[in-house]
Image (cartoon, rainbow, N blue to C red; front, side, top):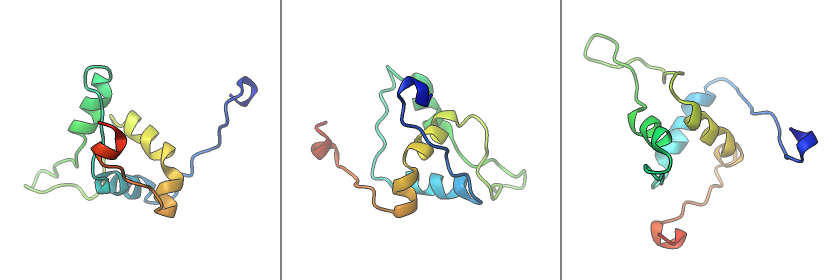
Length: 96
């Protein structure tokens, strides 16, 4: 990919990185996804949830399935997640 001019680096996949990244995404004021232009992304974010444990509760870990765009968002925001320096914009500041 670097040969094509992309600036890329490996994602850091440490212990609990999925849980920490999901909690960071949940802490955001809002995640805006155009459901008409990105229906699969919208569906993935909307439907992602802990799995039931069969005893009227939920499993302790987040499922690592059907989460490809969520993973991409976590990887893209990796520096902000680890440094906790992300700027959260309101719709008005973002121009929406």
